[in-house]
Image (cartoon, rainbow, N blue to C red; front, side, top):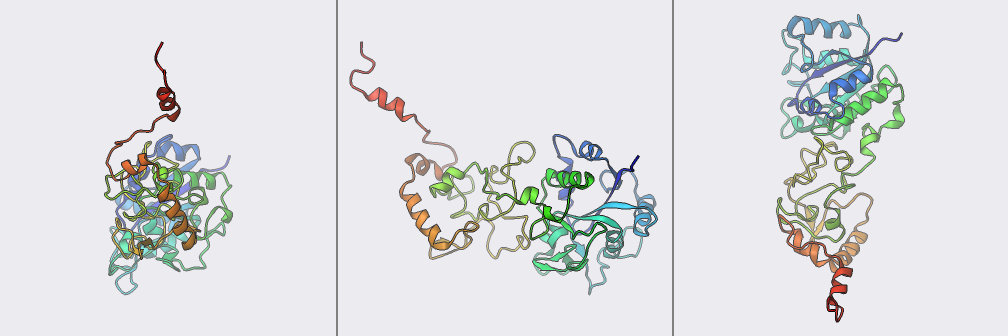
Length: 344
């Protein structure tokens, strides 16, 4: 009989939002998903009863190599300040820098998972002046390296697996862990930023409920409007890698369904786009961030044609907060308009 897959979870510089998102997992819930995959939680700050000395003892048993570890998860960025000492964040009850604990645990694990964009790239914690020296496990923004260095490989020979997002969709995590537990996850399952292809093989644009407005460039002007948010409101759904509009959040929707533009939170550097999140930067009226793989000339030509062909229904509804013009069946209208129709 084989032993359970052992998983240890630590938190560092972040808000805990990825754990909060995981606790909202549905079909199945997080605990059931891990149990079904044969995963045993060595320790998790929100799921384990152990705290204080008992929790430190469990972590130290892994860090010292006394006990085996299959999966190490870090949530939140690594705080390396001040001056690279990491002493801005110490292990509770000790004087040891948390980043040293993270290093000692990471080298013991068969798989290392950076959970959320903070753990992957530094994320929101690294925004602004970044006085705390926040970095990801394997990246500092777009720069390879992070805490563990660009050459880091876990016990199974893989780089850090970056389950990026702010926060992550719970299924992105449970699906990855299930693949690992089943022994079917390898380097072919990650993209160029080391993110699982299971969710970055899509664009946020795929499955967007506003796609008809996008096709005809019928644009929203305010956040509450129904139209496409790419042209004026900063939406990056045509560039962002994630399946947010295919895999519903909390059983019902996505940021876009909630009338907020995609800010590409799965990508490194999303936290500092150089403009307001809800504004589209343009040059000569043309959005700077064009859809993935689309040359500028094509976009200009297609956008002009699309706008010329926009149905009146979409024009009427795009900048409104509810439908004012509904779809109609032309065949029904044509039949009703025939002479004598309806007369005996």
